[in-house]
Length: 209
Image (tube, helix red, strand yellow):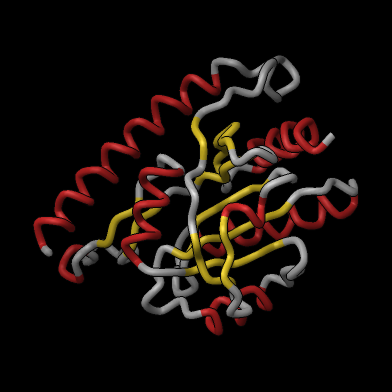
C-alpha cells in the first residue's frame, strides 16, 4: 500500500511538471487582447464518477454539451482556497450577467473531511447557485488520479511534521481549468489573478457560442 502511494506521489509530481510545460505552450498562443489566437486542445478529461454536495452521483457525461471550469479546493483550507472560491463566485456572477451557458465545478482534494454535507455548507458560504456551480468529492485515490492523470495538475498530502512552516496539510494547484463541451481541456488560468480570470471569461465565451 505504501509503495502504491509513493508511486502515485511520483506520478502526480510528474503530472504537475508536464502541466507546467503545457501551460507555457498555451500562454505562447495568447493574442494581443489577452485571449488566445486559437484555443489549444491540451488533453481530454477521462471518465469519472464523483459525489455532488447534494449526494447525487456525477459523471463526466453530466458535463457534456456545455463548457465548464474546474478548480480544486478543500473546505478547511485557510490559504489559497478562499481566494479561489471568491473568484469562482465572481465568475458565477459574470456568467449569469452575460448569459453564458457554462458550468462551474469545485473538486475537493480532501475527501476524508469533505463529505457532501461539508461541501454543501461550504457552497452556501459562497452563495453558489446549485444549478450552475457544483461541488464534488469522492474516493481519495480516484480523485488524486483524476487530478494528476486527467487534469495534469499536482496534488499532494504533507505529513503533519512538514507543516511547521505554516503551510497547508494538502498542497494543490491554484489553476482554473477550462474544459470544452466535448470534455477537452482548452486552457489553464491562475485563479488568484483577476487578469487571468478575465482571460478565462474571454475564452469561455468563445466556447459557449
